[in-house]
Length: 206
Image (cartoon, rainbow, N blue to C red; front, top):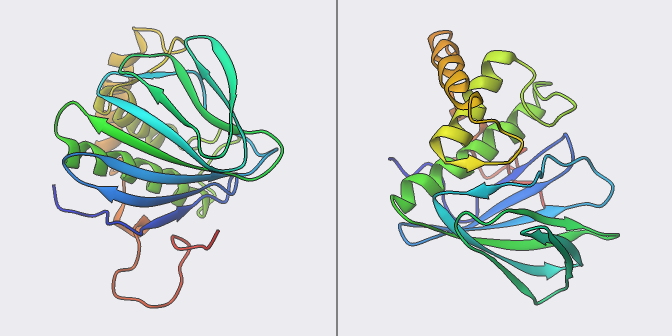
């Protein structure tokens, strides 16, 4: 896969003012930094991953974390480890801005899967600038929703107790229909402008 994503690339969501910054994307690992603000909507549900283990390092603020049903607080400087297949939710801000680093190590195809994951966020964040995001934080358009969810669930093996097994083939079918109508998991228009020195919506400062 062509290296569409590079260290330093930053993406911003108008829906909840989240920010994602790429620190490293390679065959060995994907490292990104997230900024979350308290009191903003989240799509951070309980879930687990089949393709990678993950570590969250709190860089600023305090976070509520959950692993295997146990909820606890993580503070600046602490790292939380999540194994492959372990139920969790990502760190959530408590009462101040939260910045944390997520380090992901894929079991296979690290560069390709890491790139696909960042492109997924780039699309969701980019659609927020086009009035394309529903109150749920996911795409408004039903066909785009199918394509995006299929990429996450069937492509990157995101899973959740809230996703019944029978939904996965439905997503795959819906995504095939969506692709026939021109919908894609990601779009070049949502990527940073490589040849421009002017700030864009994908390079908003913290």
